[in-house]
Image (cartoon, rainbow, N blue to C red):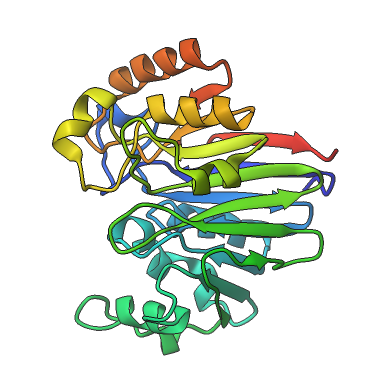
Length: 279
């Protein structure tokens, strides 16, 4: 592990539901899960189906102290949690954070609700790891580990969703998933989170041509992501939360259009790693 770099790894980039098949091989079929290595610290953003292989990799590497941040608790963002091997390791420390249900449900209650028969056979209290649960309110500034600052904000999504800005070593990574934009407007909360960011991971589920039929679904487009990044002076744009029906060929075409509009744009794919040196 390079303690002088911020590493970003995509373990799952799909939205709504995992997919498989030859038409999804390049970009992958797992749902939302992103790993950040901030020096010697390991953070995860969301617990989609990509969290299962991530947990296997952590076990192989001997990593046992992890922070996991939820944007929200829709199925595609939580389905991997019960299959995350570190939570069954009595030697592991897993700290779980959430703020989208502030005032309605604690983080521990949330975990207990979706690890409960008949929805899942094992209850949370069967997990052997030391699981610490942390609650916060949108807008809070979190400091989970020395040198790491995480800024939070509310996104426009049914049931609520948290956007994150992770700052470490003079670098900034923003996750904006899931959110729906208003036509002709740039969300000031999103602009605040992504200002000058080295990388913006943005909800690009739909195309602008599809939005009229998708109003109220709580998702956005690569076109809006480009507008936001240009306005905020962000450097990179990762198209994320791909529509489950979007094939590799369709995503490649979308990626090229986004690159033509914004040089720092690319379509995130399962297994992709990015490295940002400390400033």
